[in-house]
Image (cartoon, rainbow, N blue to C red; front, side, top):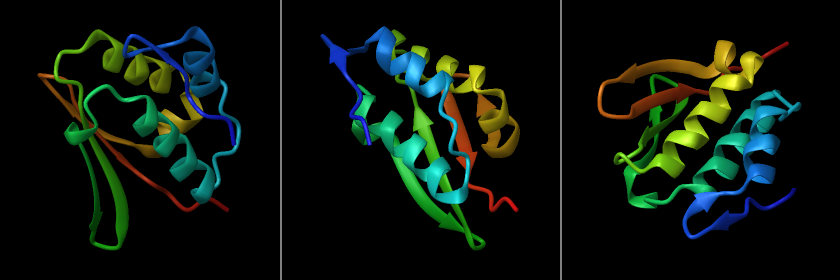
Length: 103
């Protein structure tokens, strides 16, 4: 698995492109993608991984950091991932993703 790259806390174009084009959307692939985003996240203390009613969730808070906003935007450009895993977003840069088992 590739490692995300950052420059001064901002994700590189290569990192953003990898997120946008992430192809493995199996359950494990979804987890790998979100872990990849976690490694590029500028405020790692603003990420929460939880188990809720048998589903694994990732909660991200951007903290207003534009680099983190870029990571969320890159996720939104991965349409299949977004349709499968996006659960909710709230004002202030709060986003929740649930991993989904796919057939």
